[in-house]
Image (cartoon, rainbow over all chains, first blue to last red; front, side, top):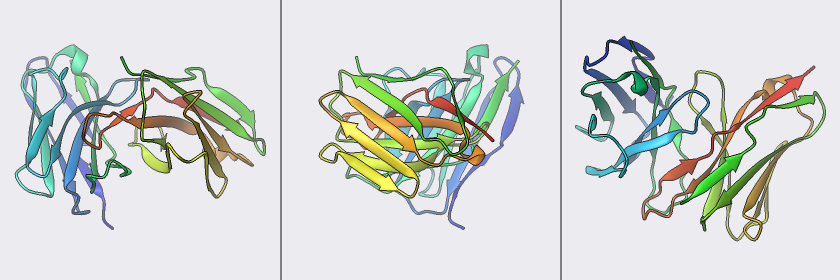
Length: 114
Length: 113
């Protein structure tokens, strides 16, 4: 089945130790998003790729980086995680420039920073 | 700044009743609004989209209304079932020039047998 797959589902890391989360999609969507969702909070957009064009949200910390080597894959790199980065990280896709697309989410990667 | 408000308290209802969830927004003129369902520890799942020129949308037991004057959307689940228990998020397009969404915190719905 076409879907959005995130790995790992659960990641525990130490303060300051870099971590990479991955997202792959078989939907052939041209837009990929990364959201951060802390406990009982709204998903917060970090950045998105429109094809190869990277779009960073103004308040996304420099600690967060992303790569999209091809249409199917996108990575979230957290260079020096802090305790406040403990959260669920959600990858989503859509095929849209028409501002009407539903988002297809993966199951998320739950990151715990100790 | 843009703000989306959903009732932070959980909504408890009995099976068979209609659940009504509210999404209010300020400092916004969204072209459309979406509703998602999120189960614990999982990613959100799209339910319905309603555009600014639509008053009401239905899908099976779900109904969404959109009042751009009141800046409010109501989400109804009729004949609710325990399996409907989840958190429901509303999301609006962010007027950023891209098709990005801004989400509310969501309201947890608990349907008891």
